[in-house]
Length: 196
Figure 1 (cartoon, rainbow, N blue to C red):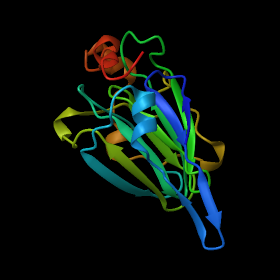
Figure 2 (cartoon, rainbow, N blue to C red):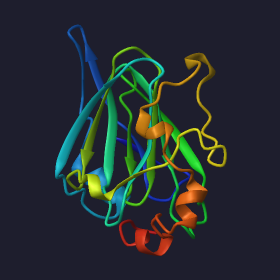
Figure 3 (cartoon, rainbow, N blue to C red):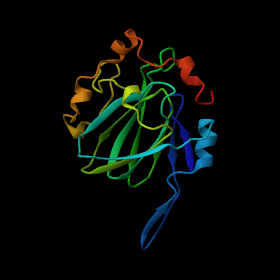
Figure 4 (cartoon, one colour):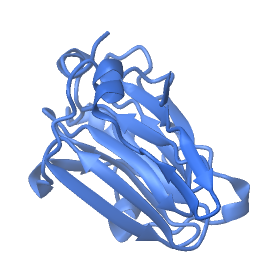
C-alpha cells in the first residue's frame, strides 16, 4: 500500500495494490499497520458508514467537536472528489484544503484526522462512499460549514455544474462565523491526535 501525506497535517492518501485477473480484481482497501504508522496511533474503529450520491451531490463541509472522529474514506463504486479542510484555529494551514480523487479504478482512500473538516462531491451517478470511523456518530457534536464558503473556496470540477446540497449544508455558517463564535477546534487541542 502506498501512502502519501497531504498538505493538510493529519491527512493522508492511501493507494492499495490491486490484483486483476480474468474474473475481475482484488485489493486490500484498508490495512491496520500502514494507517497506524502514517497517522501515529491506531485507528480505533467504532463505526462504519456507507452513502450513495447522485452525480453533482456535494456533502459537507462536516466536522465533529474534539475529541472528534478520525475517518478512513474510500469510494467503492463511482467517483468522488474528496476534500479535507483545515478548520483548526491556529494551524499553519488553517482555512486551506487538499483533495483526492476517490474512485472504483485506483481504489484510493483518504484519512482525515480528528479536528478536520470533510466534504466530497459525486462525479458519477450512484457513487458509493464508505467511511471507517474512530467514534460513533453523535448529532450533538457534529458541525457544518457551508461548502460554498468563498473564504474556503473549494474548487469543484466544472463538469458537475451547480452542486446539489442538503438544506443543512445550504444554511450552514461560514468558517469565519464559526471561528468568531469559538465553535471550531484549536490546533493545539487537535495535535494530540496525530504525530507531528
